[in-house]
Length: 543
Image (cartoon, rainbow, N blue to C red; front, side, top):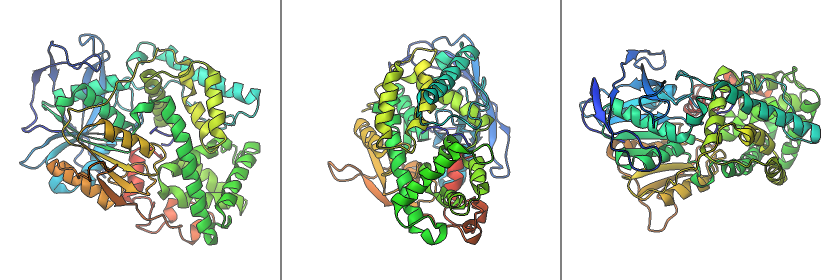
């Protein structure tokens, strides 16, 4: 759901010039009666080697949508334009976060969908307000994740104090630097930005594909503007009932389960990794490695907290398991920390983009909903959860802890229950850690005429356009025709797909400690350049 340190439709052509439209609402109420002009974006070529037909534009929107004549901010947009005579309108795409840059997702989606389908859409990527190339782009406290951080598990008063001071300092830095902006960095404002994009494109209705947090953004947009939704596909669904404190507690349990699944996979490949055939022993070896790195960080940069950051992406995508297991083995068996440092630099280290993503992540989540203001509540909940799910609980607690000290009051999340939408497609893996399955099931019940497609036994976060042909077929059919599968009356899901095969260990170089995706054979599960690895790079689960 979160960006880690590392990295719908109208007929007719785009309308040029100025159009008069209804403004977005101030809350979940219907739009108000006033009108205002919206200028269409000017598209310029900005193609890359991967996406040569990509175009870029910027769009001015109000910082405060309730004051449309006031201060403006800019949104950075990308587009792969339609080429077919049949035009199904704009398809907005969002990779999640909050805080994820969406400009790169447009090219990826256009490249991965069949040409005859995607040629009927303008695929529109965008950096949400505060993110990436949109202006202003937030960076509250550069270098906040620089190593070596205090141990995430506060084993004494001093450890807890150190982490609390870090969280408090981050919240203060955001308030000092962006006091005039923070009240408008939230999901409701971003949803209203989406409608500004729709108006600027001259489209009566939108198509939308959202991943992770993008599913919640889509659900909020649909609540605000149900009549402006043509097709909406939501992949890996945030539980709207737990925004955001309860959802993060649920994540802690789910990521621990995925870490145990990783340990079991390593145990099944003991001939490669030499860490034992018993998953519990493998997991114990991982925690011993953590203790050793707490006492002596590898290369002065990979301590206990950085180790958690490094292995967390494996909870999002099992294609990372071979490289992570090789680094684990090299350290624990061969006493070689170099592969672990390399894995940290690839999967865990923060850069300027991660600083920006985290600044927007906290700004949105802290503003969107109420968080406990008494630290004792956080402490008690964290220790109770840690007793059952130690892998990620305290790391995630500190990741969100600035919300205990946030300088802007919180909003009340809208009820996204919706009985006004056309058929909506929900796609979910049963063992997703970032957005546990219960969220998809809940949203399916809340959105009338929605259809739930389940990847049975899958644990990856993001299940379409990542290599599962069955899941992709449902998305393709929906975008092409608007049709969704319908299961038996009362069934929890409408269709099921088999999960992708487990990853396979890399060949001999990784066994010797290379621990690099570069060592993987072409086409190997999780190899650099594979659909799954590329998707998860675009979604922000690695650099």
